[in-house]
Image 1 (spheres, rainbow, N blue to C red):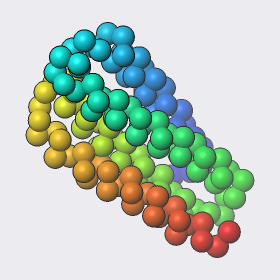
Image 2 (tube, helix red, strand yellow; image 1 turned 135 degrees about the vertical axis):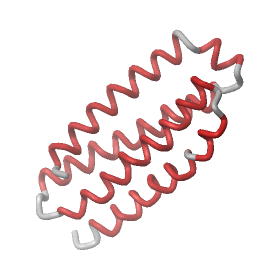
Image 3 (cartoon, rainbow, N blue to C red; image 1 turned 30 degrees about the horizontal axis):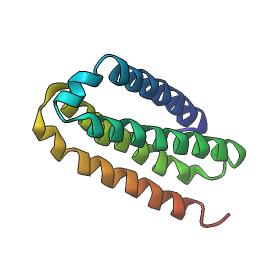
Image 4 (spheres, one colour; image 1 turned 180 degrees about the vertical axis):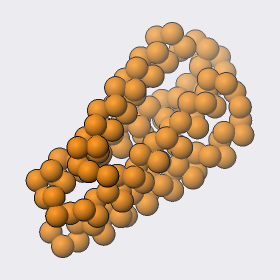
Length: 125
């Protein structure tokens, strides 16, 4: 992974978050509310955006400090965490497949591991 790929992924996942968030807020709000999943949906969008912003900051740092190749680890962990955490919550909200809720904690652990690996990667700054 390179800083360019991290920034591109931040852009793509950010755009996807806006699209999914807007679609949910405008077109699916009533359905999500009726299903009791509005809070779950908002959590998925919120955590996606938190980590998109983190990816963007990480990519920017890496662009200025290219010797920090270990920044690829938190980037991969955050991308995987977004896909598993937010992705499983989106599937749960849109399909009602409750078994997808089992995947969310794995994604959450990846997000947490990304933050810990970031702390390790920048220890020499």
